[in-house]
Length: 249
Image (tube, rainbow, N blue to C red; front, top):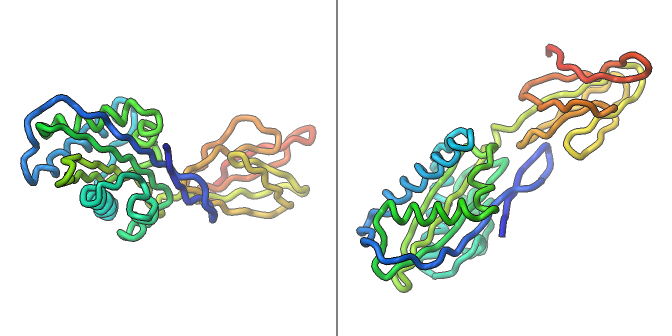
């Protein structure tokens, strides 16, 4: 059940999260008390290995996301309630409460259990294999717009389940800000993603986006991937056509 949220140009758009209940695994060596941190590090290492294989940058640990992930993992372990809203809050709300200023946030959760426990890397492997095998979780893991993460694992004293949470985030200061100007003497229009915008002559419109969407001129044509700080101008061309060009600020 994917869940996500993205804060875009002065508006709220999508974001991502997913959950997985993994099945019990064959007996393995118990995870020693206090070694959840080693398993968390192993989960991050496996996540970044999967991203590297997909040609994506590594996720960087972020303290506020780590705190938010730990809060949910501990809550689920103490209550044995499982879900993205198990504590009555969404992933975005938990991240905000921990002090993370986000423009996009996503979350994967899971639990695994075994009467014999797990070796440290085996626990990380079981969690990551389950997430990678699930399309929604894999989408979160391999989201190229996500740059930061927090991973937490906690064990229930009553059921012995290991609850795991991985939060993914893109900070608000990573938003892309750019301008589009009408350099002609007539009104024109352009598209940004699925939205169409009218632009009077001589007018400039500023956009801020968390996830840069394709920018096209009025006649469609090749899409431009907006760059942060870029200035684009719509100019009249031959036979009443328009062209979209990037210009110096």
